[in-house]
Amino acid sequence: MILIVNMCEDELSEMEFVRPIAMLAEDHVVVHYSQVRLADRRAAEKIIIAGTSLKDFDYLKGKFGWLKKTKRPVLGICAGAQVIAREFGFVLEDFSLIGPQKVEVVEKNKLADGSFNAYFLNTKIITECHPLAVCNDKPCMFRIPEKEIYGCLFHPEVMNEDIIRRFLK
Amino acid sequence: MKLGILYSGGKDSTLALMKSQVYHDVVCLITVVSENKESFMFHTPNIDITLLQSQAMGIPLVRVVTKGEKELELVDLKKAVEEAVKRYKIEGVVTGAVRSTYQASRVQKICHELDLWCFNPLWLLDQIELLYELLEKDIHAIISGVFAEPLDESFLGKEIDKEMIERLSKQQNPAGEGGEIETTVLDAPVFKKKIVITGSKTDYKNFAGTFAIIDAKLEDK
Image (cartoon, rainbow over all chains, first blue to last red; front, side):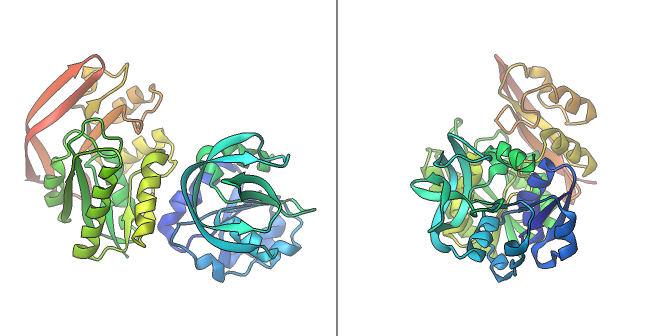
C-alpha cells in the first residue's frame, strides 16, 4: 500500500495535486499531512508527499519529524520536497519557476535520466543540497544521502509520470 | 472564498464551475473574447453565448475583448482578472484546464502576480471520465466546433450524450482539449433557465467546421 500525504489546505486543490498521483498508485491511502499517524506510515510500503497550490504555505506549519525516522522510501513532490529539505537542514530560498522547464540529470539515479521537460509550480528552491538534477543550474531533484528519500521540485505527474512509476516499482 | 471562473461557455469550464461550487462561492464568470481565430488561449465559437449563460445562471460576467496577439492577450486576461478582483472581490480563479500546460501555466503566473489562488479541478482528469461526468452531472453540451480529422459535419450541433461519447472515444483526444472539438453548454443544474437555440448556421469544410448560434433565448426549466 502507498501512503499519499495530502498537503493541501483547500479541498478544491486536492483534485489538482492529489488525485493525479492517486491515479498512478493503484493501492493507496490518502491522509492529510496534519493527520499522518505512525500506523499509517508503518502500513505503507512507500510514501509520496504531494504538492499543493502556489499560494498555499499551510504545510510549513506541519510537523514532519517522522521523515528522519522512517525506513520507508519517500518521494516528496514540490511542497513535499520542501518539507524534506527543511527537515534535513537544507535552505529554502524564494525563487519562482512556473510552467514547463528543461531539466538535466546530473547524477545517475533510479528515477530519471538524461534531459527532459518538466512542469514546475513552485516559488521556493532548495540550495546546498546534493542535486540529482538541475534546472537553470539550480537543484530540482535531490536524494538524502544513504536514504531512499527523494525530493522533486517539479510535478512529475504532469509530464514525467515515469518518475513516479519508477519510484513505485 | 469568493472565486471567479475563466468561462468559455463550454463543457470544461461549466464542469469546473460546478465542482468549485461545492467548496466555494463562484461570484463571477470571466470571459476573454478573442478577435484572433488562431488564439491559443481563448478562441472558441459561440463565445458571445456567455452573456446568455451568465443570465441563465444568475452569475455576473466580466467580459474583455482582446485582439488575440500571442502575449498581449495575456495582458488582457490579467486586466479581466483585475477587474473581477475590483468588482467582485475575488480571492481566486478557477479554470477548466485539463492537460494544457501552455494555458494552465499562464493563468498560474497571472494569479501568482496578483496574489490570488488558482484552482484547476479538472487537471489531468481522464478525458473519457470527464465526458461521462457531464452526463452524471446533467450538463447538456453540444458540439459547436470540429477542427480535426476524422471529425466531420455530422458531429456539429449534436448533444454530447452516451452515443456521442462512444463516437468521441475513438478519437485521440476524446474531450478535445487539443482543440479538436469545441462545445457550448445549453443547460446544467447551475442554470436557473435553459438556453434554447432559435437560429444557427453550420459551416464545414475539410474536417473543420463550426455550429454558430445566431439567435437563442432563455426558457423556464
